[in-house]
Image (cartoon, rainbow, N blue to C red; front, side, top):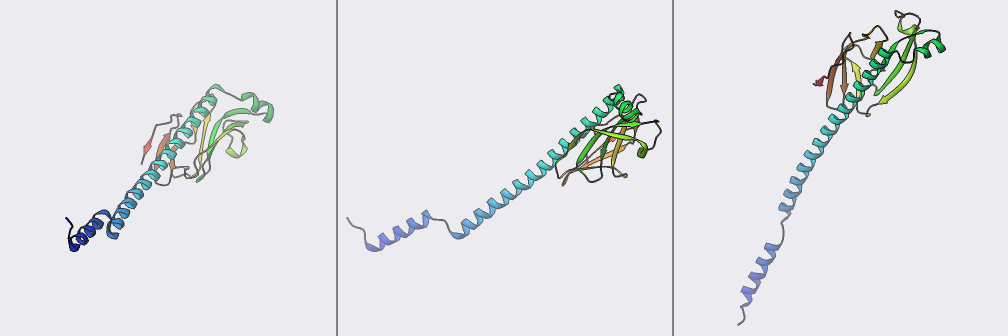
Length: 185
């Protein structure tokens, strides 16, 4: 049995309609994929920024605690006496405002009350944060905290602010030398 010619054409045209996608369907599908991909990229950038800030905070807090420990035990007292004919004043952590490098230095001075420009600083170590991360003291600019040897406590206290592209973390360093855990703002 043979089909009439008109039935053959109708069945072929229906077959081709079912197998293909229209241009509108393709455009809608691609648009949905772009929106989902864009949202994923934005979420990743925010996640990455938060991770960079968290790493910087942990590294800086570790450096501050290291300075505190070195000051308490009087490490490098002989260096100050031999090289500068001074005594060990303490250990300083310095970050210039808006920069991403923290420097740990031994602070040598003839007197514990010597102003900063009369002290000798010997760099011991440095850490560099991600290029998108900066640190500063709230209101003061430069992070300049010196843990005093034998006397205890600090010279230079306040709120340390670590900023990324979108995230900001703050923690405190007190006069007694306590370094708080802090939080994201």
